[in-house]
Image 1 (cartoon, rainbow, N blue to C red):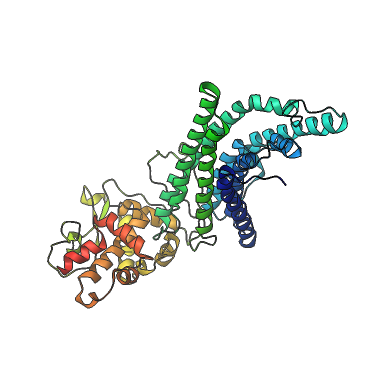
Image 2 (cartoon, rainbow, N blue to C red):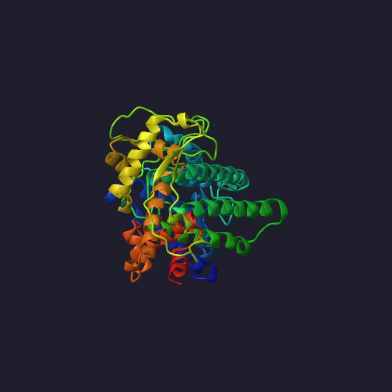
Amino acid sequence: MTFYFSAYSSLLLPFFLQGVVVSMVLLTRGRRHGTASDGWLALLLLLHTIRLAQWMLGFGGWYDAHNALSTFMFYFPFANWLALGPTLYFYFRSLTNQNFRFERRQMLHFVPALLYLGWRVLAFGIDVGWEYSVRGVPFPYHFGTKGQLAAMQERVGFGVEALGYVSVACYAWLTLREYRQYRRYINDYFSDTEQIRFVWLRNLLVAMLLGVSITFLFSVVNVGVMSLNYYQAWYEFLATGILIYFLSIAGLLTNDRLAAPLHFSPAPAIANGLQPDAPFVAVPEHPTEREPAIRAAPGMVATWQPTAFDAVSAAGALGGAAIESTPPVAVAESAAPDAADPEVARWVARLTDLMATDQPYLAPELTLPELAARLGTNTSLLSRVINTGFQQNFNDYVNEYRVREAERRLRDPRFRHYTLLAVALESGFNSKSTFNRVFKKLRGATPSEVAAGLNS
């Protein structure tokens, strides 16, 4: 088989091989563990890999072979932009919801891509199957290797590509919008979100939007400004290779069997009466028991009783004297004393007592359903108590206790020999990176800065 190893074909070859191999690994892993997200990511990788193969094989001499290899290059659907957007979207849906199942009605998202594939199959069937093989009519273009419909495809190809660019942009925007809802969901349900934040997915979405913009710009310049040669267009496919590398690494490093059960289901903003930045509260799938819905009276807020630990911040912690600590206490405040909802106050008191006595926050993977079960209520009620009573989401509420516990240990001379990692693990954090990120968010200073201030 003809393949010329040049600088241009050889640089694209490793990306192509990586895309094929990782796609097979993901398909095998997904089939073994029943994870649909691996299958969608494999398809996403293959779509990019097949597109890159066009330029790799082209610089490998297939267009200039003037035989069946050249005919293959003209009829194979290397770039199916219309399939890229829906694949990306359903990968996100399956990654963030372990119960997600692709339904028949969702095939509508792939109708444009299937129509495009149908056209390519029809062109191959007429040009190669009927005109050339049956009627014996030679191909009229490119040294007798390309038929009439293949030439027509090149003339209308820019319009199809433009529709594909719009499709990818729309689906990427939709996925970004739902990713924001997903981030609110995990903050409302999980105390440790490090493994399930999927920050790389957000970066991928932004990168794909930028990539589509660059590719579209190349196409506009090629059609409307100046004709780009193969060498100038090659750099666009090098960028595709880098994207394949990023997708491969991110996909393999994503735990296919996450410890935290994810059941995120996006809700349209209009249908739920949510503003774009409104807090997202997911509906629990398995409430522990049914409690009556409660509503906090206007102005009702549960706040932390000031303690010595509240002074441990970026400014106070670096020079403050050690003060004996007292446990955090939740206090109901309101604009008027009689405005407090006794039902809210009762659950605030019960929750505060549970956190102080049982210290469930020391479990690194504590979730909202687990805390609701220990409190003897359901997730909807507990989420509302935390949101309205403490003006926090579940993640910040639990991590506040963990940060206070870490501060207590940093101040206690008995723990002076502990490393920051040991303090983090014994305070309920799952990793040092999570400890640093949460501490910086809630206190405005890193744990090492606070520790240095306390020991000075």
